[in-house]
Length: 91
Length: 428
Image 1 (cartoon, one colour):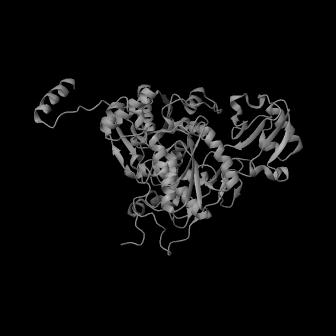
Image 2 (cartoon, one colour):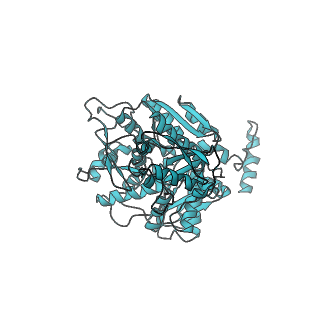
Image 3 (cartoon, chains in turn red, orange):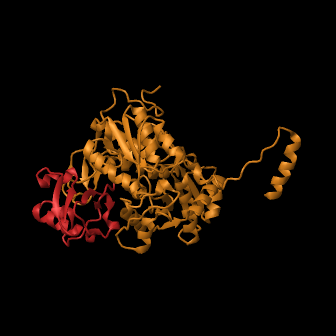
């Protein structure tokens, strides 16, 4: 599946300035793995050393929180849009 | 007259020390960066907190007591150097002795921290916006905004109007009328979003990233959140520079609980108060209680919920500070309670009848939550408890419309009054 991945501006430095990139995978976890392989700087910022999502980095699949869709196991379809938004906690 | 009165909201005199925001440090990786309208660490995506100068001179109780009655009397613990320029009159709300409520709870003493009369927008959100709008001033921003369940919308709109800033306010489509009107009346650019608060919050993270506005609870959050600590500072001072044994507060995003803990801790560290920090208790509506359920379930993984409660001001299904709030409750020896919508309405009535304070739905959750915690044995007979009541009841009239009895209507004749008195006395 080919999907569009939207990144926050704080991560664009790891993609040569691009805030929107194309990625492939049958699940969100596969898409994250694909992106992590192509942009090594992004890898530790999108998932932990075990490949699990961080509690403070939220993924949205077509604007829906992926935790309601199975997290990294969420199945994707061609043309889906995935958005990465760091949780705005603390302060 | 002094050059800067506590009751004005205009810029301070030119002689004031120039305002600057404090630097920021990542809570996860510890990296420091220059002050900026930024809440996310560029290295690891962790949250950024303001850094204070550990060697700064701190005032003693007498010095603080001589200062104007606003949250700025604690300016050494707020994230700025120099003097604040806007919202100089927020904070220092009453702490009300509540003996009838203490009896209802079965505790030694009870007080209500009454932020229903917070100035200017009748909720504790005036505190965080007072901090955020000064951060906006320090960064030269001319537009502020927020994602809100209502109270923050009112506060951002009111504070921005006084400062002459443009306000963009994003709220869920379905909010109480008073919260919608109480935002748009100030001339704010109010946007109703089809979705829950969590949808609005996600959208505002994208808006802040794209347009560079000062979204107070997104990219100004590091500065904004520090305003909540002033609730703890005021409680300590108003109790005569001592701490209560327990504090009960409502939880939406969970930030207030974490900031109460930080505030009490900072006053203990400064030697302004002594003894044990208060046990912290959090209350949520059962229709949206992800933090209470995390507490009961154990562990550190918050499971988001889709809110279904009349308590819209607490309807955050994915609370960003939920895990930290659960830690604050566990580690201080406190706990949490989730109450039904019917119980929260009873809580509003109990607070009004016992204390003479009319609270919005979140206040009903706090009172009903305290009663549930007392029944479960979490509050004790020797406890001195402060309940944080964070917003005014006129904002959520819809919640109590069905339970308030219709008042009798009579003709303007004395002979109509006597039977009325007799019938009412028979009922009571």
